[in-house]
Every structure is written in structure tokens, then in C-alpha cells.
Length: 544
Ligand code: G6P
Ligand code: ZN
Image (tube, rainbow, N blue to C red):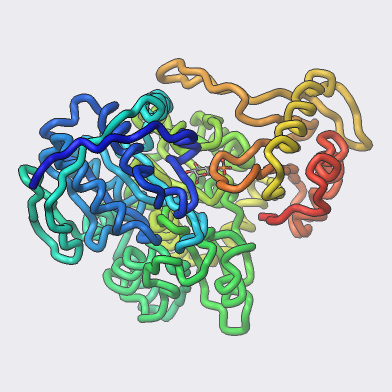
């Protein structure tokens, strides 16, 4: 082995977004692109020498190539050990679990999450710190600053590729590369949290479920736990083989993209329970028979029933949700007498609350749910939580949700995504609305009364850091809301997200079609923000 210094030049645009650096595969394939970013990252991790790093990805195209590069750079940068998932695979929650269990210094996860994969798809890289959670902004900003000053990177050369298929230790010079079972640590953690006997009995009684892994990283985890440990019949997990192009799936578990599962769950032979996870298996979607659970409701239901589950029997310290997530969880928190924190979009904002013991369950409207067991959202965890509730209550998904609405009221909720908007048009829409926000309070539009309107800012209660401009909020009388923000995870143009919420206490009105229940808010959003005129588009691309 030889360590060499390769001359390079700063590459523009290597600023990590909501969840790491995410670009087209073709961008990552450019000479030095990945190496530059990893060099900047390792330089920022000043005390990395002698430390253990966790490494793996969601198995998408370019994953294996990138793993070998990062291993050779880790060898050149003084790490003592890298724990890499077999086949280069580690789901995001599993990476978090491994970092925590093994006391690793940090971890590199290769994923573009729910974005499509394959040679024409997306690739991504993100860094997680020692608590198992996404690197805070001060780290990612420092990495970005370094990328803009690079003149060279350091890498080991004249070494064989690590055999990613072979479990156990191999070496690159002084670096020990340990290929680990990507599933084991996570599966063990699940067994500490949930009632596996009850869930086994649920399957043994003939109940059935369908888990759609969408050709992505979730497959091996779901198979090992559901079909392995819990005795669910083979075939319970569909699209369970991780493929480099996800088998053509857009691996985003929502009703728009998980259509195969939606069809199964609404068909004549629908199983009792349906679920899906995304590219890196941190997102989840929950379904009953012909019944879709919104992520916001899912968080609220889990919180309301948490003490039925062994891992949460002692109760919750608090709940946290991202600002655009519906306020259904707030009502549960109020009933439980615990705080409900409202954070900006992005799982990283939950990290401090979890570390400080101020929140136990967290959730986002973007199909993310999780708890203090790791520092990422966790698709399989959410599915097992639901399964545990189905098993311990004997109720169906729909019964649990309807009972919840009857008790707490229903927060009708929908998100409209306007995708591929020219960046300047999207910016113009947002700045125009932002400049008019302060004048909206007190105004009445038909039956809708604006109580307040602002650009959401968050002060972290643990470290006092302030995050501004996190989304435009129009708060209406009675708890209805319109929220607009630009996505931080897209790779083509801008995606405008419009979040709509209306609270309905009356059980006689809990059966409306959400788009109808929200119709006046949808109209008002367009009226106030000029969405159609700014975007030049007639309708949103995705409605969740
Ligand atoms: C990723 C993050 C989430 C975030 C989501 C939506 O999945 O991990 O925490 O909620 O992206 O982000 P976006 O900026 O696209 O709305
Ligand atoms: Zn994801």
C-alpha cells in the first residue's frame, strides 16, 4: 500500500442539504467529486486518528464504487477501524444503531434516500456523528467551506478492493476493515423494544401483512425480522431484494409512489396490515385494509398508545414533530401532560431534544417516525410499533385510527408538491408571499380568518441555536394552517411544498375525502401565494 496526495481543485456546489450532499450519479462520477467531499469531511474531523468509522449505503448504483474509495481514504487519514455493512449495505437507521452500539466515532451513509437510483438517478453521501444522528449544521457548513479551499486529497493506492461479501476483518495497511452483518445490531435493538411474542402470535393466528421494500435497502431488515424472527409467511416482504436501480421504483413510500402496495391493500385479498419503506429504509408508510394512515396521524396514534409497547412502558418524556407536520400529536401530548416540540423540517433538529431527554417520539409529515432508540427516523421500527399495537389490542389499523379521531378529533391533512419549478420562479413566489405575511393577520377570506402569519424560526431549547426562514405559515382560526416551503432534498429545480391542515372535532364529519375537507384552504393557498401564476403549472405533481 502507498499513500498518495492527488492534486485537485475546489468544486462548486458541494454544500450538504437537508440530509447530506445529494446529486445526480453522473455528477458523483466526475473525477475527484467524491474524493474532494470526503477529503473535506475528514479534514473537518480533526480528532479522527485511531477512531472507528461506520460505513454503508442503501445499495443504489455507485454505492460499491464509493465504498471502496472511502475505505482507501479512511486508511490514508488515520482511522483505526471501519465497520462496513456486508455488500456495502447499511440502512440509515441501522447505521445509527451500529454507531451507537459500537461506540463509533461517526459514520458515512451513502444514500439519496427516497430519490430514484440507477445510472441516471441520484446518489448521496451524509455524515453522522457519534450520537448516531445527522451531523449538525456547524459540521456540514465547515465541510462545505473546506470543499471550497481544497488543493489535494490523500488516498491509499496499490491496494486490492475489500471483499465486501466476506464477513470479518481485512486490512488496508494499518486500517482494519471489518465487514459486518448489516441487519444484526438493528434486529437486536428491535427485540429489546417490542413484544416479539405477541407479534409472533398475531402472525400465527393467521393474520397477514404486506411489506413493500420497494427494491431498496429495507428488504433484508424486514425479511430477517418479519419472515425470520416473527414467523410471517415467505412473501410477506415484496420487492425485498436491494437492487442498484431499485427495480425501477421511485422508492418513496407514499400513496403516489407505492402504487403496487396501494393496489394490494385495496384489492379483494388485502392483508390486514400494509407497510413500505424508502431507499435507505428510514421512511415508512402505514396502511390498513383499504385505509391509508397519514404520517402525522401515525405519530399521534403511536404516542397515544406508547405504554402498550415494552420499550415505552414507562411513558414518554415528550413528543417532537416538524413544523409542517399536523398538530394531531400536540393533542396527545396535551392529554399526556408532556411537551410537544415543533422543529424545522429535517431529522437533525430532533437530535438535541433526544439527547437531552426532552423527547421520546419524533415524527415528520414526510413519512418519518422514530424515537430515542437511534438518532434517525426508522422505517422498520415504525412498522413494528404498529404491529405491536395490532397484536396487543386485537384491533385493526382502521379501528385504531378511527378510535383516535373519535377521541381527539381529526386533523385533515394533505401536502401538495409542485415539482421541477424553475428556481428563480420558486424564489420569487416565496419572497413575494414573505413580504406580505405581516399584513395578513386579522384578514378574513370567506369563512377563513387569519390569526397569524410568519416565517417560522426555531430556537433550539438545548443549545440556543437559531434557525430562521424555515417555512411560511398562515395560521387560521380553529387550528387550520397553510404552510409553504421549498424542499431541501430535490436535485432538479425547486420543489414547492404546500402543507394543508384543518381540524375537525365532530365525529360525524370524520369521513370526508381529505382534498374536499381542505378545498377552501387549497383555494386560499393559491390565492395568497399565486402558485399557478408563479409556477406556470396547472396542478401539483404529487399529492400526499
Ligand atoms: C429527508 C429528511 C427529513 C425531511 C425530508 C423532507 O427525508 O431526512 O428529515 O423531513 O427529507 O425534506 P424536504 O426538504 O424535501 O421537504
Ligand atoms: Zn430516507
